[in-house]
Image (tube, rainbow, N blue to C red; front, side, top):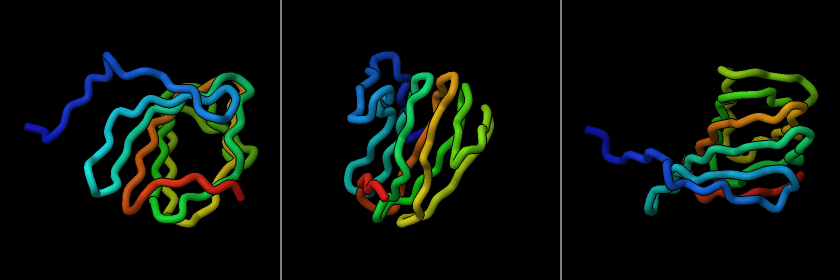
Length: 112
């Protein structure tokens, strides 16, 4: 049996400080800095180039088009970035949903 189950029926989309970007937390551990979210970009939304000081990040595209540094990626694309690695800007022409997971340290968002 798994240690944790989130069926996300009651998960709520929360607006972020970036226009057109929302997220749902589906897992957050106590103390070991693991966090998993669904992030939804509306058509035309852009997340600026940034890094996470201590957290490693993985991103899996579930639906739509996820544009990373000017190149569009579709469902099934998977990205891995170690802590401190700059990435983005992230953009979507038609809108997208991605699954993002952070590990290794507290998650911050530092615009480059």
